[in-house]
Image 1 (spheres, rainbow, N blue to C red):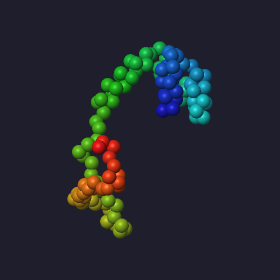
Image 2: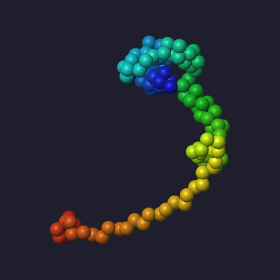
Image 3: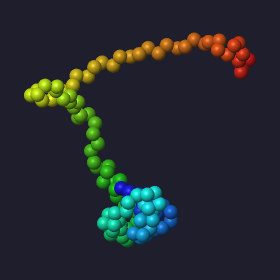
Image 4: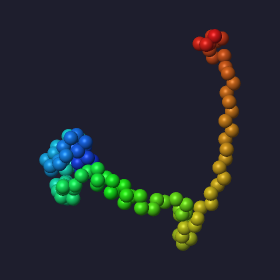
Length: 114
């Protein structure tokens, strides 16, 4: 991810085709290690491609990925040795009453708007 972030920073900075040295300089400026293999792989994958088109195609791919939702089951680990796991019962939420604080005389009778 840091190599991709460095590439995007270089492109946002106006460098339409950053080199490996450009990415190493960006990563080095924040004290991050530059992995030569990852940099070369990224540069080979994006060579000759427009970054906005790559981002748009990535969004289309992510749109088709199912996102979690109603199918999750809460599981509690058992304390005993052989019981396995059982679904946890959901406790009803206790509503706490929020009492409105009455106006106090902390302002000693003075008010900003009087």
